[in-house]
Amino acid sequence: MQSPQARCYDAGYAPAMTTAATNSSQNARDTRAHGPLDREGFRRAGHALIDWIVEYRETIGDRSVAHLPVPGAIRAMMPDRAPERGEPIAQILGDLDRVLMPGIVHWQHPGWFAYFPANSSYESILGELASAGLGVQGMLWSTSPACTELETHVLDWLVHALALPERFLSTGRGGGVLQDTASSAVLVALVAARERATSFASDARGLATVARNIVVYTSDQAHSSVEKAARIAGIGKEFVRLIPVDAGGAMRVDLLEAEIARDHAQGYIPAFVSTTVGTTGVNAMDPVADIGRICRTHGLWLHVDAAMSGTAAFCEEFRFVNDGAEFADSWCFNPHKWMPVNFDCDVLWIADRAELVRALSVLPEYLRNAATDSGKVIDYRDWQIPLGRRFRALKLWFVLRSFGVGGLRELVRGHVEMAQDLAARVRAHARLELLTDPLLNLVAIAHCDGDAATQRLIDRVNQDGRFLVSHCRFHGRLVLRVSIGAQATQRSHVAALTELLLREADAA
Image 1 (cartoon, helix red, strand yellow):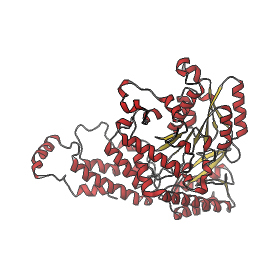
Image 2: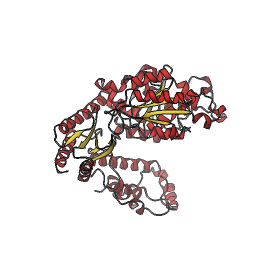
Image 3: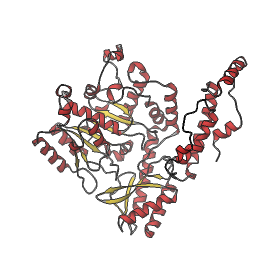
């Protein structure tokens, strides 16, 4: 299929210019070959690229979800060195199809049921484009007040829309900040917890000595980012306690409390508990409220990772995902998963922003300014690992305004209903079983004949080309995961997947 931009450039357009500018501009082109785009060239190339994106997304269902080339095949289509002279933009845009498309896995495909949703909407694409066009660097309020204030305001909107505790609002002691991913969110929360647990004394006493006494707790089903954060924060893998889970995949509260008591007795500093609302494997929910009470009793920082499932709180009937939020020191979720906001976009709320700022703030002379000194503004550089930050809030603002909270509720409810329909068919099938009762949009399935049969079922589904599923292990068993959340997915796609699953289960 010829791409829209290839057709457009094949038609042979040249940037439109005023008569007065034609001669001097043409002379510059003659001596420079193909150089950077001028404004008219950008406008036309931009239109062509938008057309290409629209055609790709509207026909994506006609493609196989994932057809992987042999390793190195994409690089083999490119020259060994960057070009010495500029190339025509038509050639560059044409290589989106020729070079890149053979190696694209189609995460926006309606048959995408692997890993987790990674949605992108036209609205979020426009917000990202506006951010790139503005090119602001929002490290300080003073470097772009709109970048900071829009982010603060939109994240307050989300507190209300998701019915989270008002302690996360920026109008009180708390507030929200956009991180790139939940991995960064857990890292900054852990650093703040480490500093609070040691009375912000790590600089004076030596980070290595202090950090090696800190203990982190999470479940054995939690995301790997918790262990990575502990390594980066100087705590180390050996001081991360992976608490076993119950039959449904939720952290065992009794075992957590026993581990905390044991570490206290050995002279360590229990400091941080990371709970999960929707584990990566089977979407299990930790008992956050019960864990939160333990954290308050022992003075531990409670972090909640609600990466995908936090979006469900748009719907009142699914607000069990917020249970225990009143105990949380930090809470995060990813709009770039189930919401139609393109990667990357993670929301991290803090109950007491002063603790985060105290842990992360470094203010050299070259960043000093009157607004910061006044104490009346938020400088988000103090809420994250890097200094620099881009205008992520624009795409979130575009989506919230265009879809409305009601539209987002409809999206969530539709996906949950599809998952429940699939689960009902699996329950009724003699050779398949559910590993957990699906609470939301993820269905965990195993073949009754064991792991080998489950693997054959995974392989047959993925070889079909219309769908992609992924796997995990849960209590030692291989699991076929069906994660329903792509914006393009309709009931017909889930119905077709269901029929394929049931038919191949009999053959497996």
